Length: 322
Length: 243
Image (cartoon, rainbow over all chains, first blue to last red; front, side, top):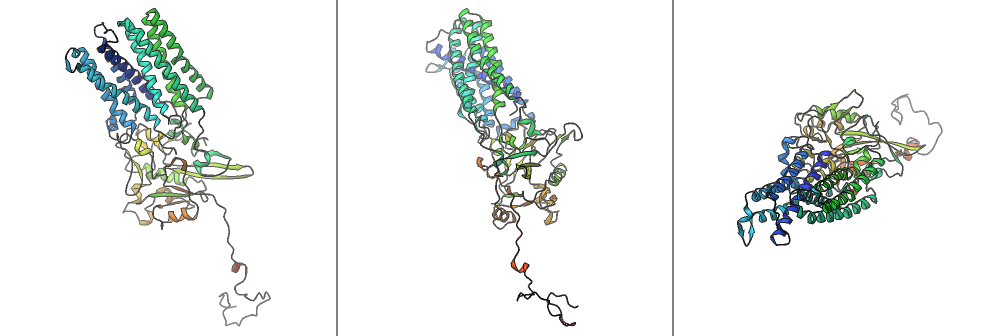
């Protein structure tokens, strides 16, 4: 598949936003049950929630560039009964609304007014937001995992990877934010960011190993229904390109793919964790921010590779320009 | 239930591309708007087509066969492109089984093309919506046309009659009979999409010669000698009425 940059940006940006929100809400819950000291910085939650919202909005904007007819995007909410893409289209704005209310609630000081049984409004909104956030990870992953024709994507590991990468990158950003405004939270968040990065490493390597062993289910024999071991296409039926030759071929040599793979494996996992560790120990916001930026850049490569690695059976029909 | 479909006889197709041009001509002229082309005479021509004729070489020289392979939307009975569409623009008609795209609802997200293993959906680069074979839905029900013309444009154009059109759910139809009698098959059956379009395989052409074709009917006793000359007024047995 040809990697679509709008979709690469969408999935990585909303992953960061979702992970940051989960980190914030976890801090709030742990603070409430007394396992963490409450953040002292004024505007800790509202500003961080606004940052999460900005990432989600940037992802949403990026997604519009994928559409041929963005002015009709509202129609995409129609088929939520059957389409994971439609479900994602519904859950993303709902989650963004929750994050907005969460930021607003913290800004207006709702935590000081408990609703019932010690639960205040922001905790309730945060709980709903967490549910929507996890649902959004599921929808985003299933958009790809539900396509049985792309065996590289058609696995639960796709959903797990989206979740793990989102949490890892969001926690990295949370650690960088805390390093700036609330240094005593840095070690806690950095530890979790490193933990989720390790989980992501495990699940992504598992999917890489799995994908390396896949054998295509369709062959030229089943594609045209001729049972002969040697079939060669001599003409795809047209002299130039078409949508089918542009959308489904990345057109890069195998060496380029391998280079991207090893680059993202380095940029997403060991380098950010090392920078993060150094930043947390030295209490350096710049190092922690660098950890986030390096990992985000690596995630762009990871998502590019995710697309490029998938081989569509339709490619069997488009092998020879003539 | 009706399921309209094409049956394409690979034994007969000569790869002349008449169905491609006829399809393009009909479908670029319809109410749904043009099928865009870019650089038709340039270095890198590109365009939207519903139908493509591809060519494959089967076997190793000298034992090779050239197989011309027309390919368009197969109007699957379980179309994987339909449930993934977020807007409902892609749909399968209940009354005749044709899979269509509502060009006014399509947002051009290309997700349906990802969900089609056959590569028969093409985005129109100018109208920015997904397009595909409609089985000439604007032609096959047109009461203005003579009944014999109510067929898809590709079927009308085929000079070798390699394309048949009809209801594959009607066991008496021409297409059902062709599938039944000539081992019609579906493409990529491994995905369970149940394509409605079928292909008839290459098959050995045998000339059946019956005994009575070798043996003169008017010589039942195998008397190969010269028959007696009939009278001038009598007709000959082979109906050459007179000498």
